[in-house]
Amino acid sequence: MNFKIKHQPSYSLIEISLKQGERIKTEAGAMVYMSPGFQVQTKFGSGFLSALGNKFLGGETLFINEYTSVSDGAVLALATDLAGDIAHTKLDNSTLIMQGGAFLASSVDVNIKPIFGGLKSIIGKEGVFLLKASGSGDLFYTSYGVIVPIDVDGSYIVDTGHLVAFEENLTYSLKKASKGLFSSIASGEGFVFEFSGKGKIWIQSRVPAGFINWVNRLLPG
Image 1 (cartoon, rainbow, N blue to C red):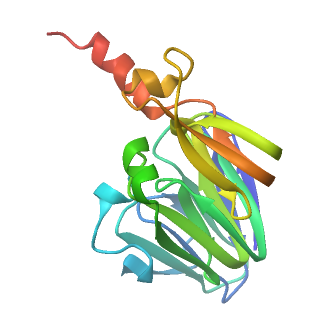
Image 2 (cartoon, rainbow, N blue to C red):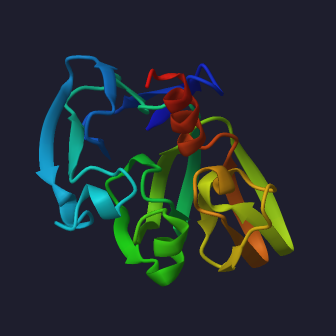
């Protein structure tokens, strides 16, 4: 698999080239364009998005598309719904935890399943489930705004609405944010994640709830 992420960071699009017989699974509706050299199969849940559905998965759909290249050099382009970025992580028998709506695509050997976030995620209004990507292969995930990687060595605090992904070896706890300090206050959340340990997190520079609130202020009546 070869790929190139274009038009970063505001309107990112990924163009993927596959050899004959290579496969990739994607979020339903993510395809922008493709060459004729693909077989496409739509699967319900693919074993990782349960019938609990969209409400609990932070916007993730219940369907995925699996593309199989029937010729060398078949090209597939993917993009996210929001004006934002795309990041890539090469998993090597490793794990990455994502917010529910961050998944875009992955190699078929990457296992993606929901994990229960418990009371933390309910209070933080990020959905009851996070997504756990594990195994070996390519993983692509998306954001609203620019994706910024941060190396953590000790502790780090992140607004819940800005979190995109983090490495599994990091631990986190949910805390009440001080009024006026974080954008989640404006969206009615008011909580932050405090990470501890050594590892990497990825954040997004904008919050969808902030954009929605801005649009609502412009609507009449």
